[in-house]
Length: 213
Image (cartoon, rainbow, N blue to C red; front, side):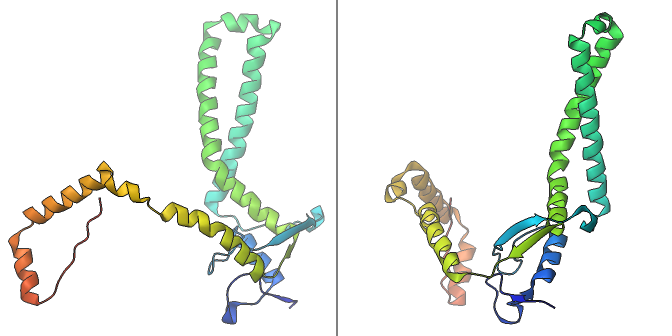
């Protein structure tokens, strides 16, 4: 039910879709790009839904473990850094700074802080993807129809840079790197077994071998 949209380059039977169906699919996948034509949808965020209208999303067991690990790691990191700063600068913790046991604790807590930072950095991307999926569900979005004129302008702006990257300057053909490649190709043809050439001649076919270095 609802108005049909043409949000991407797809044509034929998959050209049109309902906005609610598309938003539900986006929330489950966590991406604003079409899987078929790889076109990024043009969407506009209107406003956040009311808290009473917030919806939950499907989260796998691995994602739950990642979220718990990031939350616990963040809490431990905040508590540990707070205690270390208080113990290092507070006049009431002079005896702690002089005690050998507390000095060992400082090293242990510093090591655990590094572990927590690594855990947050490693799992933070996965948790952020879950947050984007949740945000996609609990925001009011407006998906725009596909505009061919705008798409052509963006493609034309991207073509020169892509063409420049693929071109090889003629002066590079005389560089030592290319000359070395030609020498290796020549040596390879010299030491190639004679059986290959006899088999090729017997079959009546001409085989061209191109080797790039």
